[in-house]
Image (cartoon, rainbow over the protein chains, first blue to last red):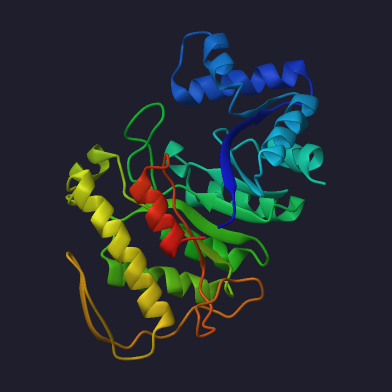
Length: 91
Length: 201
């Protein structure tokens, strides 16, 4: 059996872009908490953050034996983020 | 590392939005595109637009050319297995063999209640999942005349055509017949792992 992992994804090219996407995602979830706790709880499991943070997380999944990552995108209307995933993560 | 894009179109996404997403994913080089299979909108407000996963994938199959398409995961409760096998195999033909298929036991009771779909207890849904995997294997891999007697499903003298498309890299049965890669989800209960090991990839 191939080893796959499904992980939430939210990345931004820089901190302002990331903050904007975090706000969009929280709005999609209907969360009005402000969000820090919400995201902190997901740091161990998500591909989340700046390009360097996202690459590091993918590296950890690879080290754990994953051959494929399903990136679960909860702000899918943002096509620029899809483009950024490819730019930042693909070999 | 291989990368798939997974979206949750029950967040109110129209077909046109899903088309734009898959076309962007294909153009930037994602290997595969998966969508969830839910009829009730979440997270966020309920009552948003939702689409049928396999009807959408049929459309996307004709608007893309290389990206793999599939569900993560279709609940066993949405479609009876004969219809499921026909739908998935039809989209496989329409896509030139680019389908991967995820199947799960289902969990979201309200979307069943709202549409008159049966939602039996988890034990029975797990039985159904095992039998649906067995039937997909049988219809795709066995010769004409195949029959199956399960607890919930009975198949007599199947004549199932077309078979899945032969495409390099696909899993094959012992007789060489190709089939879509099969996926299942879950938190890793012993039973789900046993079913995954026996039928899925």
